Image (cartoon, rainbow, N blue to C red; front, top):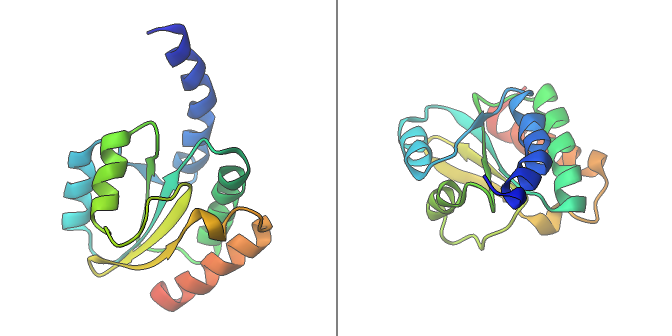
Length: 143
């Protein structure tokens, strides 16, 4: 492992753990994304995680707080820029949505039902993002 990879691992590991420690399953390969979505029953909140400072620093805490209030059946995440094939595989399931990270996909009954792009995360307060997600999740999965 070169110095750059070690440096990036030091930055990214806590960002990954912020979600995995909250119960998210990390999908790191295209195969894991496709297999998971193919067999997924019920609802899911899928975070496209990112190193991006402001938006990702707001998205992860807002998502954790939202799913503490209204929890879908599954919590999943891919890491844009790090697990590139997994991220591309996820995005291929909703090609009409332009790539955006960080972002949040709400999945239900085998399809994308709602998408929160970066533009609806950056420049918003954490509480606003959380409340938005709670509203959407309440409509999808109930309370």
